[in-house]
Amino acid sequence: MSQQFDVVVIGAGPGGYTAANRAGQLGLKTACIEGWKNAKGDMALGGTCLNVGCIPSKALLASSEEFEKVSHHLDVHGISVAGAKFDLAKMQARKDGIVSKFTKGIEFLFKKNKVTWLQGFGKFVSGGDVYTIEVTDNGNSGDKKEIITAKHVIVATGSKARHLPGITVDNENICDNEGALALTAVPKKLGVIGAGVIGLELGSVWRRLGAEVTVLEALPNFLAAADEAVAKEAWKAFTKEQGLNIKLSVKIEKVTQKKSGITIEYRDDKDLAQKLECDKLIVSVGRIPNTDGLDAAAVGLKVGDRGFIEVDAHCKTNLPNVYAIGDVVRGPMLAHKAEDEGVMVAEMIAGQKPHLDYNCIPWIIYTSPEVAWVGKTEQQLKGEGVAVKVGQVPFMINGRALGMATGSGFVKMIADAKTDRILGVHIVHANASELIQEAVVAMEFAGASEDIARITHGHPTLSEVMREAALAVDKRTLNM
Image (tube, rainbow, N blue to C red; front, side):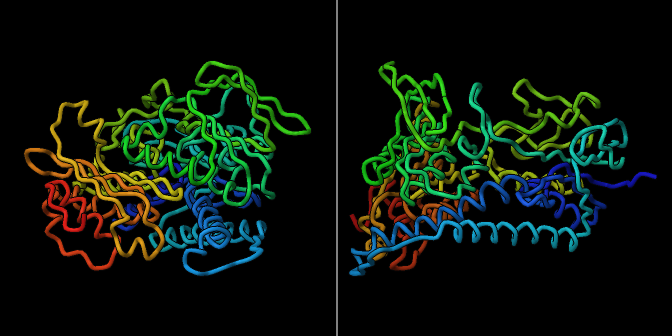
């Protein structure tokens, strides 16, 4: 007889394992299906984020940033370091150790919350009042493992790297995010196709460790999703100060791999033919939803032309008691967005009435400096005809920032001209990922710039710049 569950989650990335754990906490009999195998061939929870995404990339970013500080940025503190060296194998081992710790941690949480881990890949067989799901070892019908049933199903199968036609990714010489995180030597010349989050972060890692990095971006604008002031500041930091060679309005025509390296033929922003020779190439042109193995047609689950599952504001699909969260649905492909959707859906299944404000989900790029924002950009609001007030304050006026030698960057706060409600906050700074959280809290509670301006901020702290930006909205800064 097949196993029966109240809730079955397909996929154990941040959205899936969070949904499963919350469902288990709420007393629902829960199973989570996951067939991911790590580089050693062992089954592992955590999906892309924990295994080959967020966690390992941040580990390498931290290690490479420490090396660059020691090599180039300690002299301002009166500290001289000669002949600094790094051990790439040890860096990679540290990264792998962190990943293993977190994936094992999810196994512990599953046991704690009485979540059954079904090792394999899940796909729909039939629907109705109860859904039948087939779990297979490798996603093929010939590898049938077992049949289970569930009253509620949460699809959280995540996304995979988008590849370009005519370019074969082998994750040795031509890499997506997986291969780019596992290089065993620093390339002399590194090419990156795509100046998005992944391209900038991984390009930064290898530049700091000594690679000459060229980034080819198809769009005419750098960081088009960010506020224009932020994009301008980040462009200056990455290109003029750090030496990333970023080319915009590029059209890739041909990529050729030879024993001597890789040749990228492209047309530049003036439509002139160009060539880039490099040792390794990273292809980072976005991600696509991982829905092709679900057999959605078997139950009539609506999937759009681009592979995204159609859902409403509460992640409900067109089928009763079937939900979809994370990268397989509309909205930003962010781990924390998937996690909160997972919590929301689990609580709805348990009869609660949770709420998720998508406008209050922060975006973060973990470069140096970091880039973070929440809410809308000034250009978006102007395009919508919304009258706004803007306060922008640089970190160079902040005593803590100067003491830490991180005086570049700024906080920009945008508020409604009539109500003073905060509509967006945008930060460029070494600690932007942490500082943005104050803005998230304020916006979640429909706060005004006056609210932050009236809150006492410790001195000296970087957070004082947030307060100064709030004061600047009303043109009454205290320190500039």
